[in-house]
Amino acid sequence: MNVLVINGSPKGKASNTMKLTNALLEGIAENKDNIIKQLTVKDMDITPCLGCMSCWGKTAGKCVIDDVMTQVYEDIMQADLVIESFPLYFFGMPGPMKTFTDRMMPLMETYKGECMSIGDNAFHAPRFDMSGKKLVLVSTCGYARTEEIYDALIKEYNFICGKGKYIPLLCPQGEMFAIPPLKPQIEAYLNRYREIGRLLGRGENVSVELINKASEPILPQKAFETLVNNYWNSIL
Ligand SMILES: Cc1cc2nc3c(=O)[nH]c(=O)nc-3n(C[C@H](O)[C@H](O)[C@H](O)COP(=O)(O)O)c2cc1C
Image (cartoon, rainbow, N blue to C red; front, top):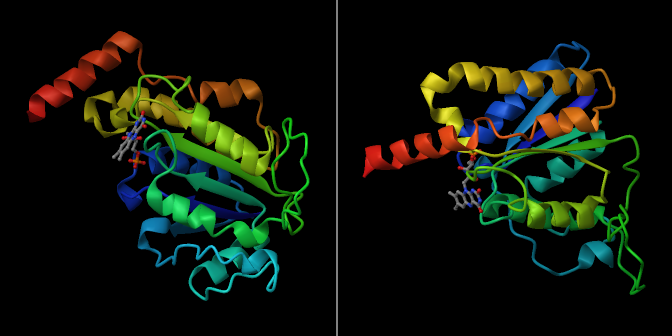
């Protein structure tokens, strides 16, 4: 299986979110047949979409910009599993990841004006055959829990990909990954991601129960609040 990882954290390798993604990858790599390719968006020289819409018209399916994304389109077409990994920034994705996502336009079918009943479906059908590919979204945020805080991002992904067409692994309390005394709790949490990685790596389904467990708070509310307060007090 070809696995493509897109690290969209502006922190690059120091990303909290990548700690979870790396645990996922450990599980995936247990199947030695799997080939993993990683991209770090912050290190890529991606030209922002020009908005010319040529990829929906004159050059349908092809972007007029010749930059690193030309290879990324190829990588996506080759991938069986795509993992997008990034933090929540102002209830959405970080800027560099948005630039990356805007460049996905050539992979979307041209919109011809119909007024569809969307329901749980994506707004735009894919231009190319994406059946058989899986998408996993891994994200951390700084807030105590994921409810509500991720609503806008999830709505965006539902519109882009279709509800139920991707696996959302959303983790609150992201800052806890950087607190050394929490290592045992963090390790236990990472094991949930390793387990999901093993299933993905074997091409098996991931249950809703496991997905929900991977999105639970790392610490109980009171303990989290105390640690966050201690942290800010220590640097003031
Ligand atoms: C510019 C900026 C915006 C942020 N916006 C949010 C937010 O809307 N909600 C939230 O819970 N956390 C927010 N955070 C916190 C990050 O999501 C959190 O620290 C995350 O774990 C960082 O992940 P990373 O290390 O993978 O980049 C924000 C952080 C920054 C720097």
